[in-house]
Structures are given as structure tokens and as C-alpha cells.
Image (cartoon, rainbow, N blue to C red; front, side, top):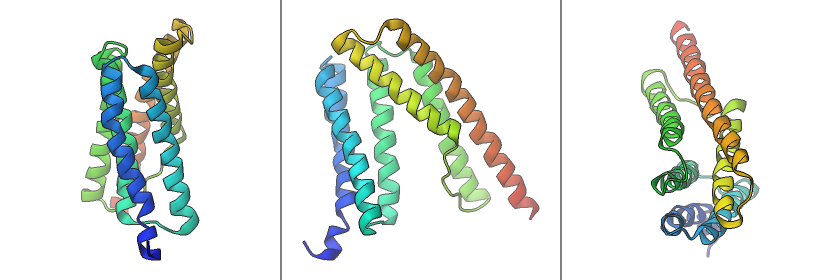
Length: 186
């Protein structure tokens, strides 16, 4: 590969992560949780790898900037949906988590069209939401494989996801509303 073609490696890794979503969902709905978890860990490793390569070698591109969050969100939503489909995640929790993401995407889109470019700037509560939600999904799957952690841990973690999703969604709405008002005033 020529040096210019090497810059495509992070994008190809993102595409591979997107493609991994299909077997992960198939394994989850087939109750093959161990295989699904292994592929999710591969996807997580690939996420770190493509980010490292992009930063380390300057292989950053506009398409990569779009592919990376798309791959992350697609995997996250697909795993949540699959676990909800097989009744391991309550529908109401799935609705809150996905509703938050829909509100954030709609708000960001509206901001872009009505106000101007929006720099993605995840808040601390938004990052906490992501960590809690991933931990919750991990616990749901490991409980199916190893009967660990205790169910009360999954319940408490799910309650945390619910509360932090609501707070995070509200935080994004208030922050972007404030920024939009400031931009219109100037």
C-alpha cells in the first residue's frame, strides 16, 4: 500500500466494526452470549485501534470523523435492541436510552441548520451515561454466561442508566439551547 492508501486503514477498521454488528446481533438473539461478548470486545479494541492510528499518524479524514461515531452508535443501539428483543432489557429502558440519543441527534441537526456548526463536546454526564449503559449491557450478558454479577447489581445499574440518561438528555438540551440563544444574540 502506498502512504496515501495507509491513511484509509482507520476507515476500513470502522467499516469492519460496522460489519461486526450483524454477527453480534445474530449471536445475541440466538442466546450465544459468549460469542457475542467476544465480538463486542473485538469491536471495542478496534475502536481504540482506529482512533490511535488516526491520531498517531495523522490519518484523520472527514469520512472517518463520521464513520467512527456511526460505528459506535450502531453497535450500541443494536446490542440494546437485541437484548430488549429477547426480554433481557426492559422495553421502557431501551426507549429512554434510545429516546435520549434521538433527541441529541435531532438537537444537533437542528443546531447545525438553524445556528451553525456544532463542535461535538460530550459533557461529563454524557460520558457517565455511556459508561453506565455499557456496564449495564456487559452485566446483562455476563449474567447470562456466568450468572454474575448478582441480579440486584444489574437492577441498580439499570436504574442508574435510566436516571443518568434523563439527566444527560436534559443537560444536552439546556446546553445547546443556551448556546443557540447566545449565538442568536451576537
